[in-house]
Length: 309
Image (cartoon, rainbow, N blue to C red; front, top):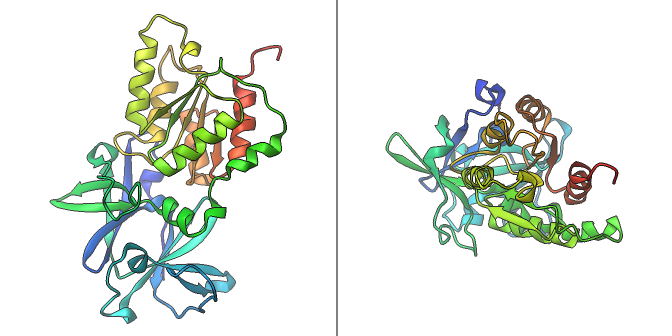
């Protein structure tokens, strides 16, 4: 068993880099953001769960903690391991939940720039959107970075954003004069976020697929001659995104003399104590863990309220 310690990169601010843990399944190379990884361990026996999703192997109990195990080979439609006794469990934490992903081998950790990560073709590993959040090239090899949030959302939809949670906030007023800029690379999650905000009255939304697109939009708004609030009353950004991540985007916004007063909300599955401290250093106004969509709406209400409201 090997616990993953926080590395230097997790303590740096706005470098637009990440560390990827490489692993293999049926000889193919995949990656996961180290920020999602708690520890790695040799595969252990699991207790099957009746009537569970076909890719859920079952549960096991390391140190008295019950963890659900997902078979990534089965999910991706790849062959099972030829040497299952040497397989690995990657224990993860994101969206305030713990899961173990069954893989065939772990190769190591590499540091890459988000600029080197490209959004993959939608047909990669099936689905309407595909299950790869990015493709990284490192030392001559291609690493498919899997969208673990999407995987979990498909297997257990109740753990993802629940648009209906907005209805629990009661009657809402339309806030068409509050344009909200959204930076989110996941098609599935961005649809849920936009639908939720529209239901909450924030019908004036601008959707971008990564931090670079959001930054380009902000730069255009800055040079338009109009007040910035005519273009964006608040920025809602994910952290993990190709081209430019949410931390780098936040740093650019808060370091800019014109844009620095634009409220920034980090809405990410990676929000934990370490990430919260990093976001605070960068000047983020709020940090909310997915899938707390009702909390996001309430924070938007506060940050975009006109004085005297």
